[in-house]
Image (tube, rainbow, N blue to C red; front, side, top):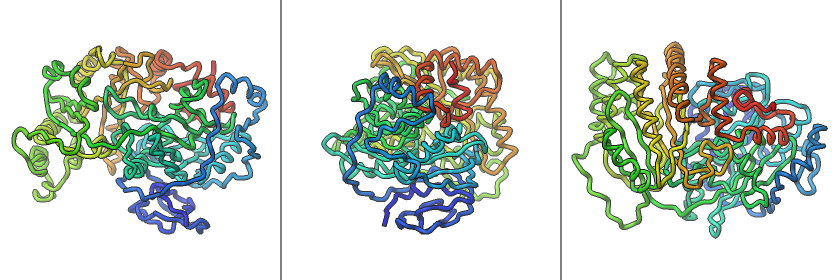
Length: 604
């Protein structure tokens, strides 16, 4: 029997034969899919592919022994020189020692796939969807498409709000490493974990737990596939903590033009490692990743509500004195929610709770009152059992574009956080994640904020101007506008890249929630959100040199806006070097899509 984590079977595709699964249930999407026969019979499925954030505990995978020693990464200068002739001829310089042509291992792709990202904002019908189960199959897929010059876009878990991993509609194939999802090896001595690219963050964390290890930081949600998580430059929060890509010490990249590269930060010339570690899937398909872990630990979380004046007075200390910190700004109010998290040792006493304690229904009292003041067929008892995010979504569905109504909802949210203030303690991986709400449009931007020792204050200036612009434009901005920080990344294409090792980056995300069943409402909110984004891009983003999170960047509607965004990207990133790497590693341009090519043109 081949044992798989349930995440391996999360891809449910209309007309796709779900390989390796002995049961299929559309409702649970994959919660019952846990084991597979090595020679399992193909099972036809008839459900649209919808990626959902699922809280599913990983199954123990154990360890796989006998992993071949990694091939030392080839210095970039040597790589470019050695492979030039092969690139010109459209050939593939396979670096695997003793490898034969990988085309003999190429599996058949499945037709009729319909992929929708979690927020339902982007969808695609690729010609074929490939889901390799081994490195050899992945190599064959990439090599075959390179040989034929056919498009092949890598996709992770499709959580990216902008559909970054999607092929252009109907014009190309896609490859998912969701069935390459093993935790291959945990090395307690070095504190490193070696995983396949399809392994989900939540499952990796669970596999590390028995070894007393964990990841240094995680993002708000944990359902990302490791390969996609790495390639988009995902981040958590903490001005002393780097983004996720800095935890990666080595990875295997299957490229069209140079075959399989084993890249490491310890390479004699690690330039290519740093250039492609955040590579947007445009340089190669990540197959395996090695991460540096830290000892597992508990965190003490402190949540409280303050105002702008007090926030300014304590801001530098908040960043400097806490391992993790984030702000949640509540537009149209004077409230800012502050969440700090710091290591907490066993036996340490919990700080005493200040003020009254509230039950969960009491915490949402303001939401409930607002909900019941309007027409509703839901009883007060049922409303009292709704969660904070459920109540917010339900209230927004009554008038998401009505500024005064949104203000009242935000005031109720501020009241919720005041009642929810206090302390709690738990494992770091459980507290660093949080509820992001329902389907949504989001734009998150990153910009320099000085150093840890000397914060520039740009982060608070950014927020003051943004909130002022929101009021001036009459936009009903739902809460929260989330602000986070990270220390610098050495990955050249990371939004947190910086030369100064003490540099810090601030991240700010604006949001509008989408009703799941109201197409007319979704269209209206989408149009308004585009106005919101245009205002932010022309205002604060331009003033502070902010660049979008790669998983949340969209192509601007107007040529002038596109030129301005490209100029900011060129100022922040080594776009010329990145374009050169793409030409060398993917000479036929099979891996990119319109989004990548528009924002980062390859042509010189």
